[in-house]
Image (cartoon, rainbow, N blue to C red; front, side, top):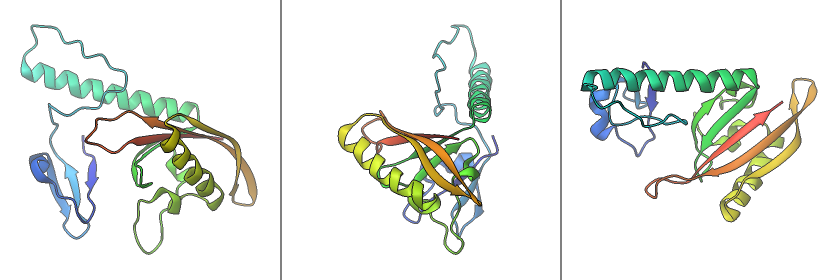
Length: 180
């Protein structure tokens, strides 16, 4: 529940202000302090709810389901050595699961969330071409055995780029699974 939200220069907290506390005004960093009943992630969890549940029980059950879902996703990412990244059409990183430090390096002087500036150069070319192709053709793109430099050795990585259907008000999102 104690997650953080970082907004861009043109974004504001809006109606969600009651769920967050401002941590840093300059960087627009907020800490989550309260769960929202109406907003939840759904990773394969059914919408079944027994009829005789009160609102407080529903809130507890939803937060438990979200917690189970997040724990499951983390376990799968760890066991199968998968790194999943959600980005938008402009390559801006939105969310990540797994050991993202294996593939992402944050810039030294200026914080940016452009995926292509955070991955190794060899991987940036593959991702740039793959994202454009997946966007244009609207289907999954797989690049096998992309060689990237890790320390003094080369490592082979499989990359899968998949368009994800989102509501029309949101930009299309892409999910990358990178495995060693």
